[in-house]
Length: 348
Ligand code: SAM
Ligand code: SF4
Image (tube, rainbow, N blue to C red; front, side, top):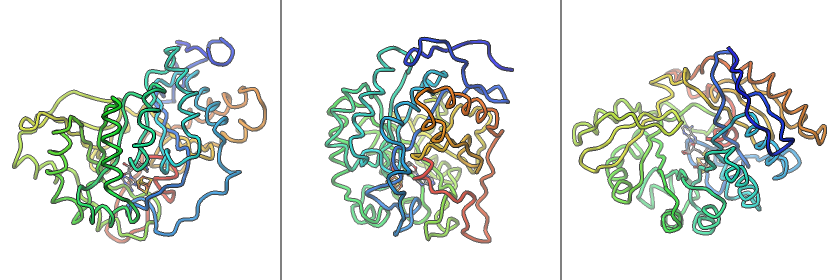
């Protein structure tokens, strides 16, 4: 059933607009936008070593990204996460943050945030805070410099640690995201969690998802979080808590550290029934589900006219096609991805 509530398109016309509600009565209130497919790292589970990136004219300009995000805000999106690729390597990305910050000031948007690998955070942390960003996610899978270099292929751990320092010093609340990788960082997860909790950061563990060719076999990398949880529970007291951040993580509090630990388990636990989110790529392709191929082109309506009417019509059409759930399966027989596009394309 469609909700009769109307949200306000204050940014555009001052006219009320219908919220985005899919055919399973789920309201879309959370948008993730990939602002670039490029990255200064080549994490082994995310990208191949040699990637071909998109030619610039394919990408939405920063102005188009602003129009697109603002249209979603007008339709009831309350939480906006910029991601990538690495969002902070997009030239002048701070102008986009600054401009989107106006929706926080009006109250139309409740949260503006980003997911970053942290490599550029030392430069941008204070600006992000000034734009109204309060919380950020930093991806960090290991505290061992050599292992970090191996996992990211190109990354420098010291830069990321300096970035986290700068973010905390600027007053940003930092959450760590760590992908649990069999035989890579599984022995180190307790130390990583303890370190993060000691610095007042929550941690979310993520299962490897079968997205895009990376040159690695997913079965080699895949570590079910049910096994990680069981192993952590042998050392620590894990208390289930109701805490939610609007995302799919289920949280526990670790009695010994006092910190929160989230489990994001797309493969061992299906979280689709409460899904409130959609994703847009840096070319303006809307994916109604991370784990499905169906998509809608928003770039054509954006570029077709200066008015947003065609864009809103495309949104109406697309949201009704949001599927009930995803089809991820990591099968033993091979490493072919379930979904061909990389996580860096859809945005994590
Ligand atoms: N570059 C930024 C970063 O690394 O945080 C933002 C984009 S990245 C694609 C977003 C998140 O997706 C990261 O936390 C990363 O670890 C995660 N990720 C990438 N590929 C993944 C995969 N195949 N399975 C699970 N998580 C993945
Ligand atoms: Fe880059 Fe993030 Fe993918 Fe790593 S996970 S390659 S940092 S986009």
